[in-house]
Length: 554
Image (cartoon, rainbow, N blue to C red; front, side, top):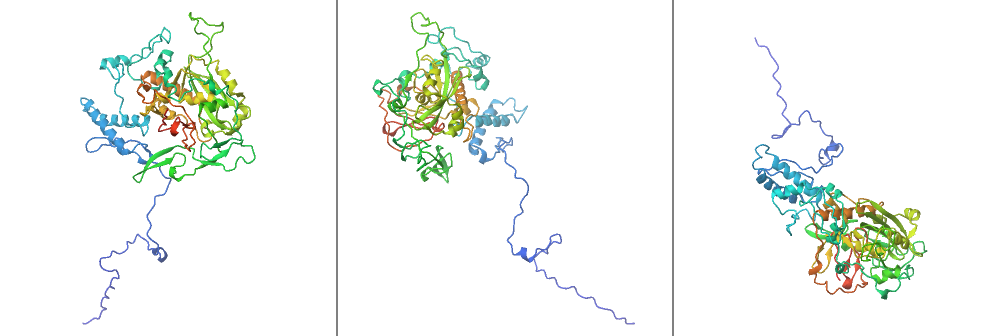
C-alpha cells in the first residue's frame, strides 16, 4: 500500500554572514537615525564627588607606606612627599626594631603621621629644609637622653630679680618647645628680649631712621602734594596729583596688578606670574583699575610732609639714684608690639590705623588716624588695610599729631618695640626709636651684600605657630591688632627656641653706608601689606612682607 505524504520543507538559509554573532535578543535594535550617530560612552550620573587628600596606610612591596592623595590639591609634589615618607619609614624601622613584632604597622602609621605634621606646618619653600644643626653648647639638641628628659619637665620660666640691663637671660627649657600653649604661657621680660634687639649701628643698615638731620628743617611745611607731578607707584605713569573728588581726577585711571609676581614651571619652563590673576608678568597691563597713587621713601621728603620726632624720654631716668624726676609714675610699657595699616592719599602713603598690644598680647591702643589738614585719601587700599570710606568717616577723628601724643603715654625711649618690618611702621608714624625687635630681620636671610631677604608675616605665623592670619578677602583686609599679636608670639617663639638675629658684622657694606636717593625708574613690587618698595641707590629695592623676600642695599 502506497500512502503519499508531504516532504519536509528545508529551513531557509541564515542571512547572518559567517563569523558574525547574531544580535542578542536582550538588546533592542537601534533606529536608523541613531545608527547615523557616532558611538557614545556611558556616563555616570549623580552629584560629583570631591576627592579628599587623605593619606592611605597601604604598603608597597618593600613595606613603605604609599601616599594616596589628590596630586592637584597638594601644595608639595606627591613624589617629594613620598620620598619623605620613605626616609621617615626607614628611620622608624630601625627605631622600632624590638616592638615591630607586637604591632607590624607601627612604622608605617608613624611615618605617615609624621609626614602629615611636617606638611601642615611648612610651606612649599621650607618642606625639605633640614632641622638646623646645633651652633652653640646651649642648643636644645645638645645633650643626652637624661638631659632632654629633665629639660622637658621644666615648664616654668624663672623671672629675673635684677634689672634687665644687668641681669642675665632667665633660664629656659633646654628642649625646643613647639606647642602653641608653650608660646602663650611664656611671660616675656626685658632680659628675654635683650639678645634680639637691633644694635644701634645696625639700624641704618636695616632702613631705620635713627636720627633727625637738622638740615631737614622743622618739617611738615608741605603736607599735601596736590598739583605736583608724580610717577604712579603702581603703573609708572606720570600724572598730576589731585583729590578723587576733583573734576577730571579719574582721567587715565591706573591699570595695575595688586598681587605679587611668583615663579612657576609651565611645560618645563620657568614663568613669572602674578598671584592676583595668574597672568604672566611679560604681558604687561594689569587686572585692576583704580586711581594713580604715589609713594615717597626719602627721609627728607617724608619729613617735609610730616615731621619726624623721637620718642619721649623715660620719666624714671638718670638722676644717678634711680629715682623719678617727677612725682608722676611713668605709664610707658616695658615692651609692646606695634602694627599700622596704610592708605594712599594726596600726601603719599600715610598711616590710617595704629594698633599696640602689651607684652601679654592685650590690646592697649587701636585708633584710626585722620589725615592732616588739606590731605585727602585717594585709595583706602581696603584689600590690605581693611578700611572703608564709611568706617573712616565714622571713626577717624584724631590726626597723627594727636595720635603721637596719645602714644607717648605708652611708649618712651626705654620701651622695647616689636614689629614685622617695623621700620615701615615707624616711618609712617614719623617716629624715631632705637630699641627695636624686627621679626622680618630675625627670620630673614643675609643676602651677602649687606641686606636681608624678608619673609611674609602670614607664612612665618603658619610655619612656626601653626595658625593662619590675614585670611580676609578683598573686602575685609588685614587687622593690625591680629598682626601685632602674631608678631609678639613670633618673638616668644624666638625666645623659647633661642633664635638669633642675623649678624651684620661680616657685612661687606656695613662700614660705608651710602645716602638713599629717590630713583626715577619704574619699579613696582606689591607687597603683602601693600607697603611699597623703597628705591635706594642704583635702584636697589627695599620692601616688606614679600613671600620671596626683598633685599636692600646701602
